[in-house]
Image 1: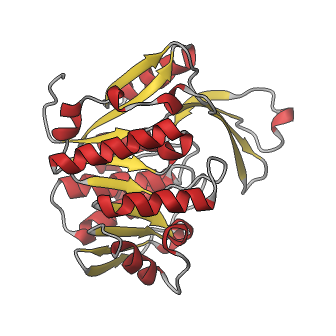
Image 2 (image 1 turned 180 degrees about the horizontal axis):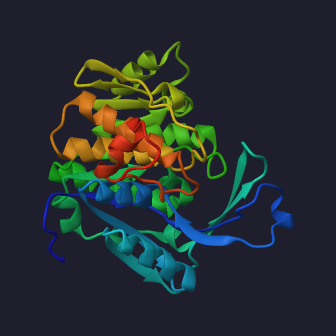
Length: 319
């Protein structure tokens, strides 16, 4: 295994090529589309890297131009990329359509993608054992039965090595049913250390609750030491080692919310790796989440630490 110079977060999951229109309206009338990339776990890896933490991203990519694009873009952000190239399956693709000024539609072409064929052999055992934290999401096990088994094996290996596991429920309705997701969540949550969820996602795992604090408490009862509920414009709430913490959101003029949850996770994990307090973790998390909402794209708006003060700037131009 290639040596990594500092404590690192290991992320595993699918990143796809992303095509999007720069204008509002039906995609059928778009004269051109821009080409980029997006994926929950690589978004987190890029976010960590921009905040000064070392991140490693593992996946499978197709032996195609889109796969080359994905690998090049993530490497360019300083992330340590470990991918297996699959000559028999394509890199996944998603298309983003801004149907109205306030509503977007994302369509995925990922069935049978290279990432859906991920296996435990794609990730070096030492890479897991030497990580400071392993971050996974509920998207990967929804890709295929083989991908789900890969997540199970990664969790077992991290548990055996004593490596903390971070898991973002990240429910995708077009990948699996609520019942299938709930079953997997309840299987995996007793084995992870940190869980992130929106209110609706938490309710899938443990049923509806009267308030976010109850959701966090019931998720924590399944096993995680740290449960973080992402509340969007209302901020975040967490139960960490039995203690309740809350932080308000940072108000911004929202342009695009896609990727904000991943940015939040990156901010939280970056501060956790630094040994920061729960309140400091949540502050950075809501800050990075706010930055992600300021620009179009999944990850392009992720901040560096030098950017943090911009949200409180009183002058529009910094000189």
